[in-house]
Amino acid sequence: MAPETWGSIDYRSGPRLLLFGDSPAAIERARRSAEQAGCSIAAAEPIEGAAERLDEQVHIDAVVIEAERESPALDRLLVRIEERARGGRHRSVVSAPDELIDAIFARTSHRDVFHLCRPTPVERVAAVAFAGIRRQPRLRDGKEDMGIVLQQLSDEAARIAGVLASLAGEEAAEGGVAGEEGAEGQDGPIVDAAMIRSIIRARRLRDSYFKGDIFADPAWDMLLDLMAARLEKHRVAVSSLCIAAAVPPTTALRWIKTLTDKGLFVRCADPADGRRVYIELSDEAARALAGYIRAAHRISPLGL
Image 1 (tube, one colour):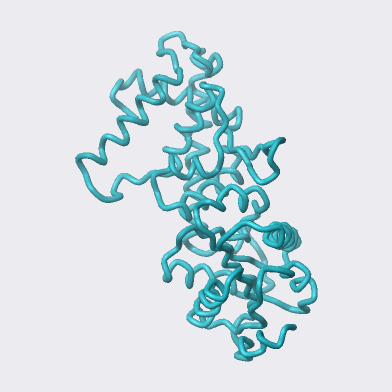
Image 2 (cartoon, one colour):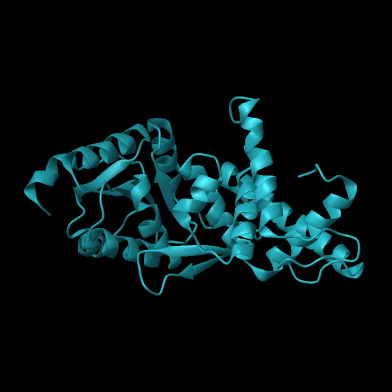
């Protein structure tokens, strides 16, 4: 352990965190968030050499990373916290600017790795506090201990998946789903990219008349954007999908992970760039969405 980090060690009884940052300011942000969350600090050190330092730690409740730029050391650390999340070792919080969204998402996908993008101080402290919650052995009812907010997110994603699957089943039974690429059902419209883009434009038009985020619906906006991209045969990077969600990037990233876990989204690695991951609709989600659009259009062309 470097001598300059000794003063950062906190021996309080709260959850023990290991903090990493790629600048003194980044380390200080992590330290301040940990203290405000009531956690103790095992060490606060630079990202350079962090993956190896993490392996030396005997016990830790969570890892907090404040990254400001890409680096090989950050890549190694992200791979390591993903491995440890999959092994049930601990949760991690990664806070980074917009330009690192794709690089971080390419290396982390587990729900116990929380990705924050341009977080407020309150959001940062809340994420650190939740990550540091010590897991208690208990009988489980099939739901992970994700916290109230994350569980609501998961439940909502499951509800969307269920509704779309149900509508797709009904549409198929009526002979109305023939494949989403420009197909037309017996009594439905052609579902093509132009139609989807017009729906998206109509949704954005509301923002000109109603201010604020009262119509925020990131799951639906991302489903529509991915459907249009699928029909146009374009690939969508995670950073682009966050923009399409029309909500803060941290919120969009939580939804992307949740909808991927529920099988609506599929992660696809970029064979030419290991730092990039594309997101696509699953075949089932695409069929369901096409079926829903046809069913809704029969009720009202101005729906959606």
